[in-house]
Length: 275
Image (tube, rainbow, N blue to C red; front, top):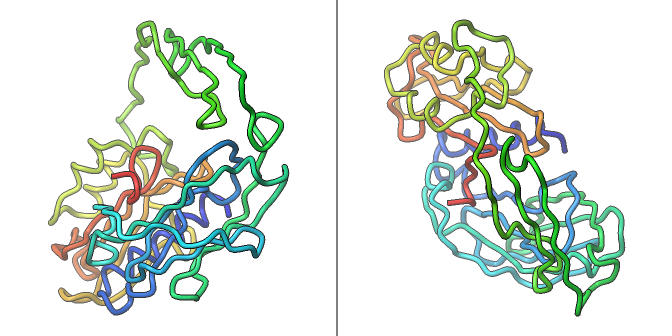
């Protein structure tokens, strides 16, 4: 599933939150591992489900057992009407042979999400022991900085253990005009927080510095407690998971609605299961 399809999937969940709890009752998402990515080492299979605490995880049709469920995820309040929605299962992805595998999650015995993921044995075997190594990565995570990565056996992977140096200052992007597409730099907390109830569509476009995505299916129309609504999404699919800021407007006036859930952000800096 590419980034654009991920945005569509999240917008379905967003619409469910606007329409009410009865629609949201069946909403669930497998968050990690992300569809279409490569994973290795020890990690977590996780996501959320609005109602079920009976979550079972399968890989290639074989059950891994039940995931722990009911953890607090503040970002699902708008979608589910509650926050005790998270589920997770610790897993060593190195247990799988290298290649593509299908991860499926079921709630109360019913499939609600499925990802195709490529796994790679990070140590060349299911569990590498007795080894140590450390390396430096110049100009990471930013120009002028150096990160040190070290092999950590319990994770079966390399982890960043230190960052030295001073980040080279890069001039901010120009905000003088409105672009047809949204670059990654548009998805900031400052832009998201600046969008407020009562603003016009043009004002939100100016804040974002780019136009909303007119791809069919990304604009949704529905009826909420305050009347007819339209939700526009500002998107970027340069990364696999996809990024978007979705804002709901009153349809007749094209002003940001005062409904409970009037904006939603998913992407690099924020996701419902990261809070």
